Length: 269
Ligand SMILES: NC(=O)c1ccc[n+]([C@@H]2O[C@H](COP(=O)([O-])OP(=O)(O)OC[C@H]3O[C@@H](n4cnc5c(N)ncnc54)[C@H](OP(=O)(O)O)[C@@H]3O)[C@@H](O)[C@H]2O)c1
Image 1: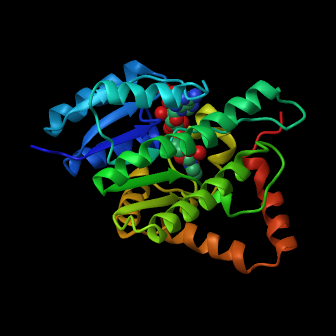
Image 2: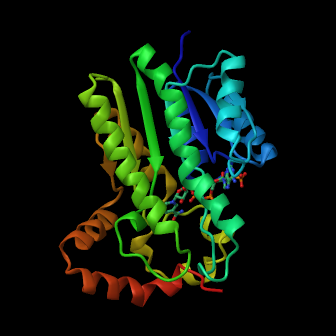
């Protein structure tokens, strides 16, 4: 059976693992990538036993600037044609612009911005040739909200991914690639390992429960939106309301509100 194939970055945990489960349930073959190969293999095994799809694991560290080209070359070697790309791998870099090293900031930009854009660029020609493509860039509600102190580049890379997705989606339409769509998925607080990894679990747990979503509805919103050709999607009513607020509030008020709350989800030390 000729199944479609989805490449998911950051599939070893959280939102990426949920993308793998949902695309597999839709009958897609998968390529899973992240650094922790054991976690990817466990997930691949779980999925193979539940769904009769093929799951390939290719471990990569996307902080290595050579990783996207190496990954795409490996897919070509294995004759795996990618129909959907989910650029999901990401993390928050704690601390301030003053306290962090340039190599940490450069790796952050590589994983969260350059690698997603490069993977899209390398995989689009094949999608165009086969007249089908789906690209989901996992951005964030932080890409809408005002920037705040700590985790300095996080909001700006996520805002960049939103703009990139809008532009690429518009370009596909303008160039007549009717069945290639690109969507920025903008979650708010989502249960995953994200806040354990960046050391803000204790303080983010103080955020009200209505602000949190499970990964499953977040991922479902992303898949539905990209199939519709919607360039940006904010999952969940509360997140939608917050995104609208950032648009209608006077900017100084928006900044003041973010500043008042941000010490709960941004670490300065
Ligand atoms: N959770 C939230 O509240 C939230 C809100 C808005 C947006 N997001 C975005 O959602 C995406 C997924 O995050 P999550 O919440 O699912 O967090 P998570 O549970 O911590 O998962 C992050 C994934 O990224 C991978 N990753 C991190 N660094 C990597 C690297 N150098 N190379 C390759 N893979 C790497 C991790 O795998 P390895 O460690 O195995 O490499 C892991 O699979 C991120 O882009 C994040 O910014 C999350």
